[in-house]
Each structure stands twice: as structure tokens, then as C-alpha cells.
Length: 112
Length: 115
Image (cartoon, rainbow over all chains, first blue to last red; front, top):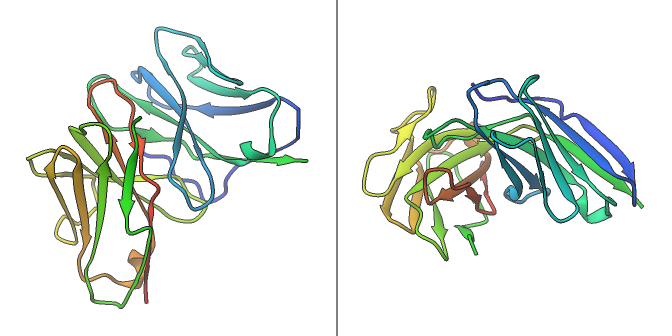
């Protein structure tokens, strides 16, 4: 089912630090995972994705790690900037099923 | 690439009226479009999935007669909130996908306020 949270987990970091945002997923059959960034009043923005046959994928300043054993996904942001402040959602998908299941989201605040 | 637009970006209407929201994929053909609703400080909740030329598939608990979805072309889907009430006030977001393993690209959302 879908994850809906009334209280967003929060992470506060200093500008220039590295950020790590974690996500636990529930369905061991999920084989495709995506991280989205959502700024206030806007739609989610694709950041990076990873398929289940990988355990790490790197983008520009971002790295996604996948641990299928414990059903855990993380997003690492290097040299975090004030513009990275947003809510970050992980999402999972299974096989040919087009539906995405979203996690609760984490509010990242970057202090200058 | 992979730009999705929504119109309007915000709308205020009176209780009992109907509101139509458009979702367009601007630079790709979207075989599948999705409609989500998001309440403040909460995650996205999928309302329905629509494939071009066929009826939408609604999630459990979503009234299909209240939330009418039309996906008439590969670049346009519409969501009509019929007889809107204050509890329908929310942030409505669409996404579009070319299908299969392709990721979903999201529109900017529409803020609906029902007075």
C-alpha cells in the first residue's frame, strides 16, 4: 500500500556538508527505485534512479545506494547547497506494474 | 526533455461547481498518465492511472464519478473534479510515462481550493 505520513522526518545540515537521506521500502519484489525532490508548491522532480540489479549509482553530486537484503535505499548529496532544501521522496515500482509507491518523504533543510 | 505541464496552476471555486485540470506532456508521447493528490506535509497518493484511449483505473477509495479522467491523446489527460466540496481542496499532481521501465515525470501541480 501507499505510505502516508502526518509528520515528515527532517534533516538539517550545514551548507557544504554531505547529506544522507534514508528510505525503507516494504516490497521485496520491487525492482526499480527513484528519488524525487519536491520544493514547496511544486511537483516532484526526478533526481536519480536505480534498478534492483545494481547496488550503487552515481549522478552529479548525488549517489543512490540500494541494499536489497534489508530493503533500504539511501540518497547521498555531496556538498549540500541551500538550493537542495526540499522534501525528498523515494519511490518504488515492481515489474511491469506502472504504479509508483511513494515513501513518506524527508524534509532537508540546508543552513547557510 | 520530458516536460509535463499542468493548467491551471491554482484555482479557487465555490462548493458544488466542477473544475477541470489539464495535464500535458510537451516533448514526448505519454502512453500512461497518473493523477495524484497530496495533502500538506504528506506523501503523494495515487488516485488513478490512465492509458491513452481507454478508461482510467482508479485506486481503492477514489470515486470515479467524482474524479472524471479523460486521456484522449498521447499528450493530454484531464481530471475533472465534479461537485467539488471543501474537503476536495488539495494539491493535484499529474505525471506521465512512456511506459514500461520509464520513469514518471511530474507536472508542477494544481492547487485547488474549494470555498
